[in-house]
Image 1 (cartoon, rainbow, N blue to C red):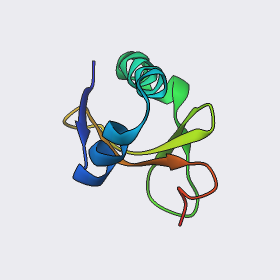
Image 2: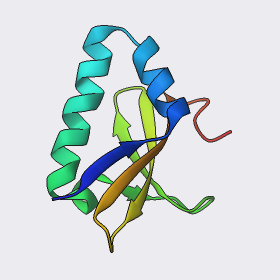
Image 3: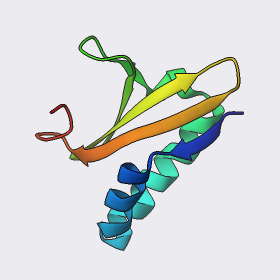
Image 4: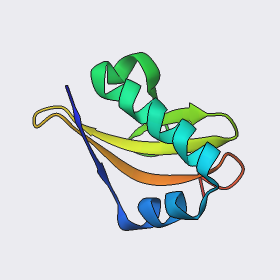
Length: 82
């Protein structure tokens, strides 16, 4: 099982979301801890993976050797790749 760590900016954004959206994102990340590559899609433009949760995207760096999912950014689909 992987551990989840958050970048400060991602955590700040998550804290500002309404409770129901925050809960959906948290639950999806918990599922992802078990089998990350079942849920994550590889990104071509930047190093990392994306996780889709409704209109939101989560950019994740997977560190396989130490089994860590590092959440880099969370934002709406239209803004996350900037």
